[in-house]
Image 1: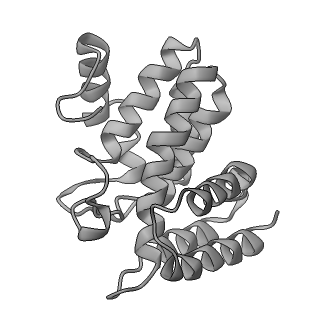
Image 2: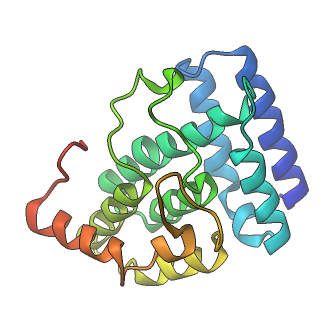
Length: 193
């Protein structure tokens, strides 16, 4: 699938979010299936195309449906990619989770009314650390995949509370490295899972 077709598909889903409830499982699973089948389109995209994808997802105006997409990307990384990585040990789920986090790019707002149905404490950094540790436990060496997706991730936009842009957040040398060590040593994060 080419990038424009992928972007058009994301826009179509965003428009459909307006008419459907975010918690509708069949619709949510349909969106997740779309991400599963087309995750490589984000990797093959040019820098400008990936910027456009992230802009579509980040764009927030009152009642604008794209804001749900950012949240669903976070949920996809947490509930689909992470759980499939845990159960199958297949590296493709690590890649899909990293792509979803890169696309989400600190855009979901997990404390708005639309998101109160989910027990979400923490942010994408915790998902990244969890993906890393579960990949290691599955016999995968995740460093290369993290570097690969960090190279194509945003290098400007920071999270709502400041911090580093996504490309640096995916670096295991900084804060993420400390989270990975905590997750390995303690086996969990306080307030998450």
